[in-house]
Amino acid sequence: MSIEKDWFGTMKDGSNVERFTLKNSHGMTVQIITYGATISSIQVPDCDGTFDDVVLGFDDLDGYQSEANPYFGACCGRYANRIAKGKFKLDGKDYSLAVNNGPNALHGGRIGFDKKNWTPTLLDDAVEMRLQSPDGEEGYPGTFDVCVRYRLTDKNELEIDYQATTDKKTILNLTNHSYFNLAGKGTVLDHQIQLNASQYAVVDDDSIPTGELRNVKGTEMDFLSPCFIGENIDQTGYGYDHNYCIDTYNGIDPVLAARVEEPTSGRTLECWTTEPGVQFYTANYVENIAGKNGQIYNRQEGFCLETQHYPDSPNQPSFPSVVLEPNQTYHQKTSYVFGI
Image 1 (cartoon, rainbow, N blue to C red):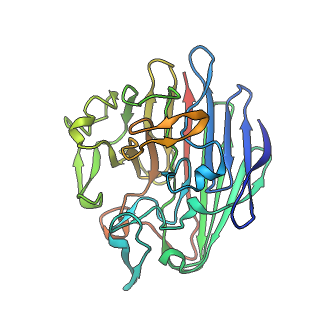
Image 2 (cartoon, helix red, strand yellow; image 1 turned 180 degrees about the horizontal axis):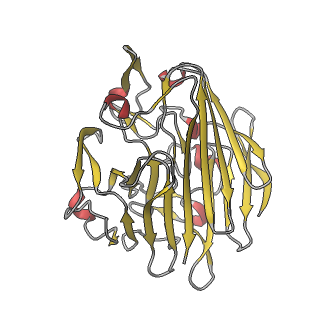
Image 3 (cartoon, helix red, strand yellow; image 1 turned 30 degrees about the horizontal axis):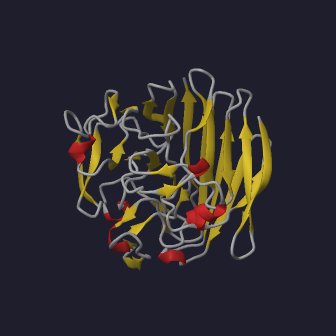
């Protein structure tokens, strides 16, 4: 594998944003920019050997810094997904977070990890991004050090390895927010997806879990067998934006969370993770966004597989814990494997 570095842009504070291009022996490339530790491009071949970019994004830094950016490719934290009313309790103490999604906190707040310029380190076979979040930032306790490592293998596998530590008891939930389109354009309604999840988290009108984990079998939420994304999407109301509970999760080994196939290009995508959940999102709120290469992105022209702990876990005692102690190291791994 080869890795090249170039300049991607300059932020308003004068700091430079760098771009790293990872390329394997099959010609697959992945580009990562330091702003948001963001995956800005993934080029993979179709069944005829034609390469296309299969993630949504922008041509320049201005796009990523714009208010129109719906977290394209970003690393989200401290807490990916939603926390109800931006409030939680830890060891009897109440914490209030920045509220940025209706009445709730979303993806770390107003200035989450997606809006930070991370510090890169080039390794022999990977790119490592580091960030320190000070105690109290966006309302979260503890000085928090996080490292995200991106590695591309000759199996056309993009490995994302997350590690984090804290000096004070805190909560966290990290994910990558790439929007995939295996055709490279158009809607994703004819993509066929299988999710290794027999339950999903039921949510209220503000997309906050009620605490109920409901069986998917025989409903519009059922992807236990391969199913076209568009087959039952109208029955959901406005599209999929739900946390699926991965059946084979054990907290240690990466397990298969999802498999997607696009029939025209023949491209496939497998998502493997050590996390208990995956947020399946169909870009329901993307509208008229000027993206890469002159494309205009609209609703349901991408899908996300955000591997993570469940939304609002700090307020849901029955959900897997998201608490990190000062003597612990947080570690999770997610892989996106592309094929034909």
